[in-house]
Length: 455
Image (spheres, one colour):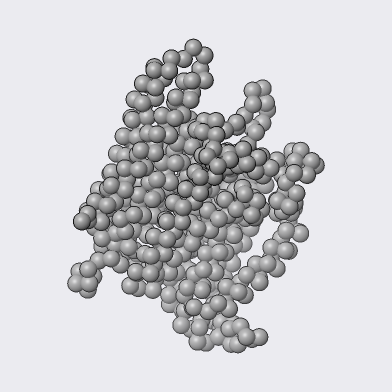
């Protein structure tokens, strides 16, 4: 029977094979499309370069695996391979869209794996419980980082939202750090006050209203985070935070009345914002009428991006058009056929080239990732670790729902990145940190009882 770490090691092989197969298909297609190209020569070049890329990717994953093997020997054996599979899909798809962006994505992946290892080494002995001591500091840091894009000189408005900060040639999306910081604060605060939230509340119209003495500080910090995100108009991240907040509140208290009340407040807030904030109102109109000629041809705030993503997905059919076959730009055309394909609409590109089968397979990998995270939460022995693992898992789930729901017209389209897959340095880096936190929790939860008791 294989040990957990050997299962993890074998689980890294499919990710390397995906990189090799993906790059081989892209290079062969590029060689076939070149005039006068030799099929055998294209195949040989594609194989050698693809094997090199696959070996480099596998080498990075093996380095991270060794850190896990010697620092977290009891950690979940499937979570890191699932993250590696998602990252391999991202590298291949971003390269297919823009090789320059793919090289940058690979560099950010290296930075993410370095921080992944640093997080594990810093918390392997003390566990994630040490983060509880600094919950207010972490929350203040997250909120402060989230507001930076509104500062003149380092932030700028892009497509109606303030997302990135720019320092020289480096850009960063601070909300990626904020999502982890706020989850840490909420998990810590709910761990200390969940009993009072349940037992000291008042019954109003059949709903339990928690006492403001305990509920107030959490609402203030969470409200500050929500206000900051609304200030930067980053609506997708706001929705992601709100969903994670309600999930944590339900898991901590076991009271359905809390998320029910939260959903009612969300409905009222969404109605108000959609009718009074022009940026949001235009997104809702584009969602309701994506094929309206006036909205489709509108230069800014229209439905062109959503409509084109729907066309791309429909064109993919069941099995897709094949790697490098999605039509992203026409010759002599000023703008792209599918705007921001490396980030906002990368799921549409995947569906077009891999079809419904490939898109469903990708969503199943995300589902397995979230399921392993929730299993870690179920196995965790202390309340803070349970809530932290639950919150981090729901953040990933909500992030996937927001972006996939946007490009498939389930909800209005927002600018959230697809975890591990879409182009974005800050997203890749912080998702590897999130993965490291889940592995630290799982290691302590899966340790034999004797060793855990000595710790």
